[in-house]
Length: 312
Image (tube, rainbow, N blue to C red; front, side, top):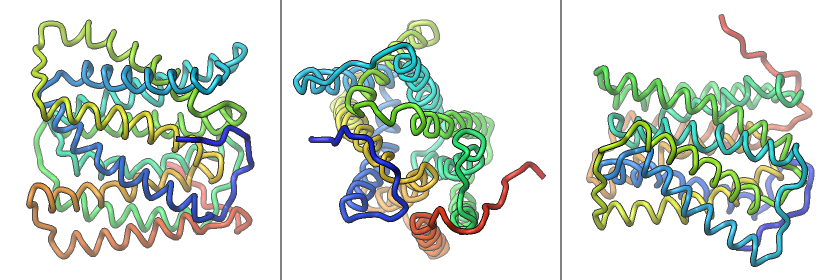
């Protein structure tokens, strides 16, 4: 997979290639939730997450070596890789893998739709870039559609509540890392930076597993191995490298709308693979979300000043 390494300014409009990469990322990451759910049934969550990113790191760093790509240069670049290894990989995915022991894959994807609003709230503070008014309004509309989807699958139990809180904490960490990466990684090869981030995250996750999951057995069934390989190769090595490439060509609040599309893919896969019914209300809400995503992607940076998101 050839990934451009030159730095370019973010663009407000998409070319066909951008739409294709965006769609592939939605499809891959929409499928990872089910794979995680399958994997953590047989393997402790922190250990399975650590192994996933260790494999992905080996693939990307080997690819970088074959291409003759340079490692990060100087303290600032290494510091950026270290920060993102924790905030983009170890923390959100450690929380996510743990939470999916108690929260369904589709509901996990639904909770992650808080990401665009979180990114929009942090954007003026971290990047000094104004989020267009129409983009924020579209995200609010999308959040309303997601609230309907959430209500369709809501269950009341202490374990699912704790799992939901863990997922939302991971969302905040992920939102920070998106904006941090946009600012710090513009001139760096996405294959190299992603590989090193995965390695840092894998070391942190394996270390956490050795401390917190000691004595827990791993059952490496055929399904668990298949899920792990999908997560490591497609969901990590390919998807994250493509994600960082796409981040160079669009604004962070735009790319974060992937998290609004993912739950719809997760719900559809549940219907097709697990024979789960899709109520008409859920289908209608999904269409509202897709319309909202289109509004965010088409928003122009030159529009009127954005609505400020504050606590009320």
